[in-house]
Amino acid sequence: MAERRRTSTDNPERVAAGPVTSREGTPERPGHPDVITPDAARLIDEQYAGRPRLRPVLDAVLTAVPAFGPVAVQARKTCVSLVSPRRTFAAVQATTRSRVDLGLRLDGVQHAGRLLAAGNLNAGSMNLRIALAGPGEVDAEVLGWLRRAYDESVAPPAPRRPARRPAPVLGTLTVLVDGFDLPGLTCHPAPDGTVHQNVHVALSGHDAGRPYLGMPGRAGTRALEPVPGDAPSARWELPVTVRRGGDGLDFGGPFVRGVRDDRHIGLAWGDVPGDGTLRLFRGAKLRLVDVEPGLVGAAMRPGHRLVARVRLTDAKGNPVCARVHPPALTWSVEKCG
Image (cartoon, rainbow, N blue to C red; front, side, top):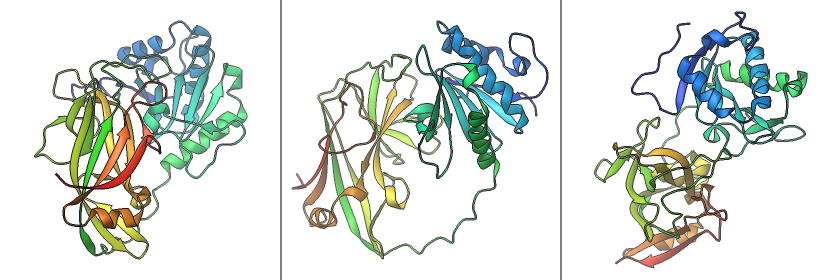
């Protein structure tokens, strides 16, 4: 497999390091040195600067994975992702000065024992993690879970079910997202202390008729009507199609995201460097499926709308992220105008 070269369209925070092979390496990096590109090596060195005793943990993982099959290494600012021919199955992150987290994508596995909830590791793509303090902890149990994550990642996807016939449309719901208490233009929510500059929040969607910024790596999704992080408030009004199926209300439209039981309005947080893009680092969900059906019905009356009032700063002073719960989010009905 040919080494992948970085191009101008690549995410600047992700550099492909090429496939991991079983070729012998130097004594310093056994098993994988000559497939790490200079750019990737620089990012990895920066991750472990000041914590050299943790670097052997990453080396132990990279030495083990060639036995699984084809694996590509992608170095980011804060972690190293391991990618099978089909998808990312693991990630290694030096989370603190004394701990490396091995993130794993294991569908249907709950956290228990050494398997912990992954949080936002690798931008939320991992659902579990194992905390490692040294290379000796990369033992048979850890390698077993890592191998399982790889095997699941290369298994053919389950056959797609026939598309369901769309449920009847009840009408269009107008939703007003009213954000308050913004966190400011700078923040550093990641464990490594990375500082984000010129932070903005935007509505995620596909409406080309609204002002927008592109989001690298998020094909087809735009950061609509971005608002600076130090603004007094952030407001977006949007239409949502409401349908009624056999299992209750469903929602759709260019501003609605998520699968059937997770329909939500998405907010995107990112750095705005001035090049027409928003560099996403956090996202928040305002879940429409959590709204009481009676409230939806009341908001669909002529001259009314559904209002999502959301606090945009979390308890640590950072941009709110993931699924937003009350009291940070409240839903109500009000008259338009």
